[in-house]
Length: 210
Image (cartoon, rainbow, N blue to C red; front, side, top):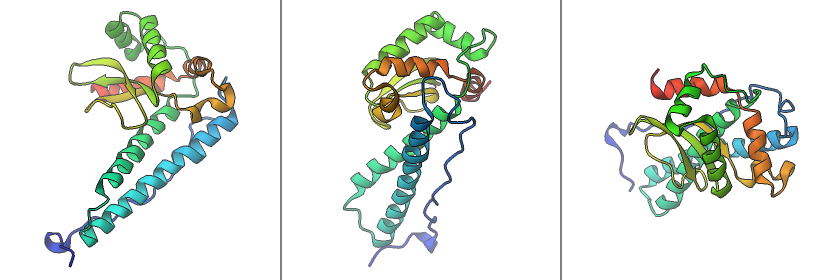
């Protein structure tokens, strides 16, 4: 017989969430096509929400049956889908701009302080993006109070605990292959050209507690 939690007070499985709508027309980006955006957002990102909900349902069943035989696989799916959801929601939210990082934005000032110059940050980001198998993520790290560009392979292999993503750059093939084929560098340039720096600044301010 499966064990019951005290007072049998279990949370219901997390319901499948609605995909966050894009804050811009998917045809509005330069160098990233409507088709790529729609496939990426409507299919891939939406599948992560479904996967997260399915994992929550599976965990509830495991509690009910007191059967933990597949816990490793379920937990790997949980982190894959949860991290993928978080990163994609920020990724889509910070696009739709003209790529101009105004010099008076706090995030621009912080980048110049932590990397030495805006150009040095771009150089590191591009180098990480060329080698990553998942994401090149500019994060605010409260452990040392500065920005870093972190590399992850997949959604959940290599993240740093506590670091807050402010510019997640998806370099998985689903993000760029339709438009650019193997030319990942061209996609990275298009990503930078479409950044909405006011949105990025909001993520930075929130992460840094400003």
